[in-house]
Length: 410
Ligand code: CTP
Image 1 (cartoon, rainbow, N blue to C red):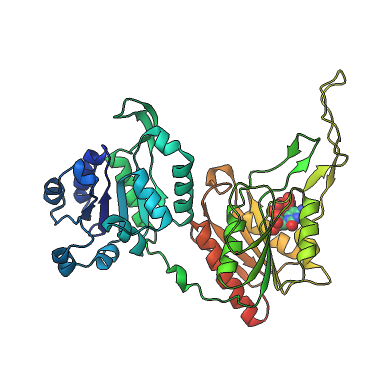
Image 2 (cartoon, rainbow, N blue to C red; image 1 turned 60 degrees about the vertical axis):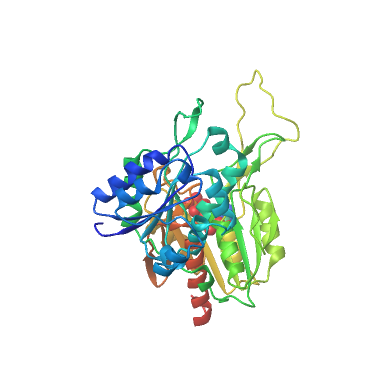
C-alpha cells in the first residue's frame, strides 16, 4: 500500500472540510496524495490547506499554462493508482456519467485509465432524485466504485441519505480498491472479434402467472445478460437479446425482444435462429402453474390453494440439441453450493459447450449486484476469474467465445 498514488478530487460541498482530514489519514498510511480542487470546492476549502496537508501543489485549472508545463492534465489523470472523488457532488457525478470534459476534474475523470472511487455527498433529495440514481447506476456499470453516502443529519437541517462517509470509512474503501487491479482496460481495445456473426442472448428472470395479478419470479436483474449482449454488439456481432421482465435499459445497438414467460422466451429464441452463438444467461423459471387462472384467485373457505406446477421447457437444452444448433452454446449455472460439480453436471446434461458458473448465495450479492465471480467450465477444465464488474465479465466472455470460434468450436 505504501507509496501508492491517490488522485483526490475535492468537489464543492460542505463535506469538503472532511476531505482535509481524509488527506491526512491517507498520508498517515504512506499514500501519496495529489489533490485536484474544483472551482466549487474552492468555495469550501482553500488550496493552501490542501497543499499543506498533501505536501504537494494543488491542481485547479484545466487551462493553466504553468501547471500544464509541469504536468499535463492527461499525465495527471494517469499518474495515480486510484482516483478518489470526495466529496462527489451531484454535479460531478452527472458530468462523469455523461462524459463531460469542461473543467479539470471532469476531464481527468474521462481521461483516466484507473478505477474511480466516489464518496457522494449531497442533500437527500438530490441523492434520491431519479436523475442522480440513474447517473450512479450508469457509473457503477462503467466500473466506478462507491462508498456511502450514509444516513444522518445534514448541514441543510434535513435528515436522510446523502452524508459523505467519514474519512476512515473512505480510507478503508481506498485500501480495498487498491488491493485489487485498478487499471481499467481501454474500452476501444475491444476489437470487432465477432464481426459478421449472429448472437442470441437470453437475460433476466421469467414471470410465470398464477392468475392475472400474481406470478412466480426470481431475483435475477438481467444485468449480466444485458452486459453480455452489449459486449457482443460492441464486438461487431448482430445481437438478438430475448429479455424477461427487467428494469435495466435495452442495450444500445441490440435487437431486444421482451417476453414474460419461459415458453415465450423459447418461442422468441427459436424465431431468432439460426445463429452462430447462443448464450443462455436468463434465470428461467423451472416450473409454471399448470393451469393459470383467468380470474383473480380469491380467498375462500377451502383454505390456501394448491398450485399444481408443471416443468417449463429447458431453453438451453432445446437450443443445444436443435436441428439448427449454433456452433457455440453457452449456459449459465446459478448455484448456491457445490458450484463446479453442479456446473459440470449441467454441461453434460444440457449438451452445451461452456458453462459460466457462479455462486448466487445471498451473501455474495451477485443477484442484482454489479459484480460477479465466475468459473468457466468446459470439457477442457475449469478457469476461475477474479471478482469483476459484470461489464468486464461480459467483455472477457466475448473475447473467450471469439477465440473459441476462431479455433473452430469449444
Ligand atoms: N435454462 C433454460 N431453461 C430452463 C432452465 C434453465 O434455458 N427452463 C438455462 C439457464 O438460462 C442457464 C442454465 O440453463 O443458462 C442453467 O440454469 P439453472 O437455473 O442454473 O439450472 P437448472 O436447469 O434450473 O438446474 P437446477 O434447477 O437443477 O439448478
